[in-house]
Length: 131
Image 1 (cartoon, rainbow, N blue to C red):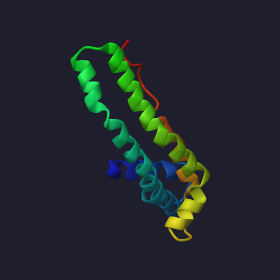
Image 2: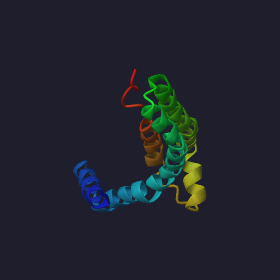
Image 3: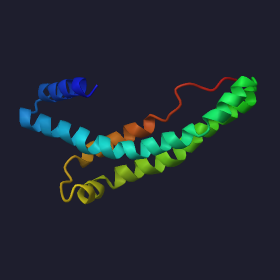
Image 4: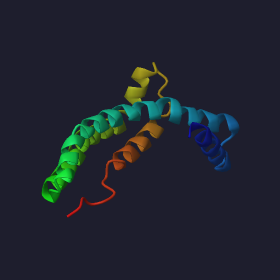
């Protein structure tokens, strides 16, 4: 996936008018800084939400739709409790966070801001639980 991303993203940046050096630099900021930082709260959030999987399996096995819907909604809520504040914090503090972690190299903070918005949308339910 990273190989395909490197070809596509850099190619699209070049097609947008960026030169080779700038396109490669922007891709490096995306993969080396923004992806690394955005994955931390997402990984923790998913781990917390997955702790409810046994309860979801149990309610599915006993065919309790009310309990199943409740457990699925609880998993989404648990993920959102961490994801929303983390993404908001990464958006508002993108520049100082990058400057602190990468010692004055805060380039790419705009990329982190955009990625923090899109990361929050990963947790939006794509379907409604069974009724």
